[in-house]
Image (cartoon, rainbow, N blue to C red; front, side, top):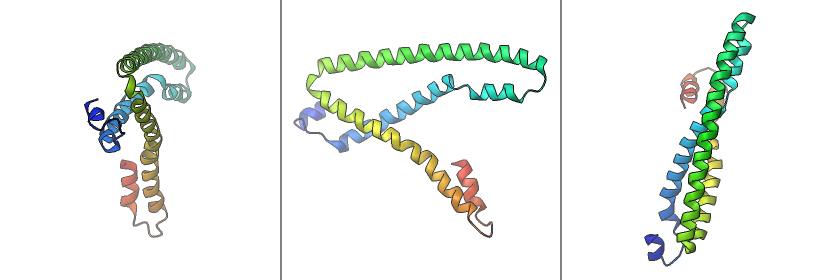
Length: 150
């Protein structure tokens, strides 16, 4: 707030970039936690791989119990996060009425940055993998291993 006051209300992108990056990193961590709690396809694939029907019944009961716990935690944590975020934004915008435009600009930039993040995560390893697979002699094995690591 002090920096906005010093800049006389002008939007200073250089000053905002670290804050935008921090918020993107924090939201990525929260997103990873929520994905862990909400996605269940690995458990369903486990059931599909089992051939014996007697084992499937026991495994199914166990997996259903685990999924109920994970989904309950997911809804509880999501509700707590949304409530806290809502409360913070309401209080912030109520106290700092003139900074609502800055909050909106920062939110839009962070939102757009979150769309660019998957390109970096998935496109760069794909480029290395394509280059290694197109090599005629097979001498680009290190690129393939690097793409797996990345």
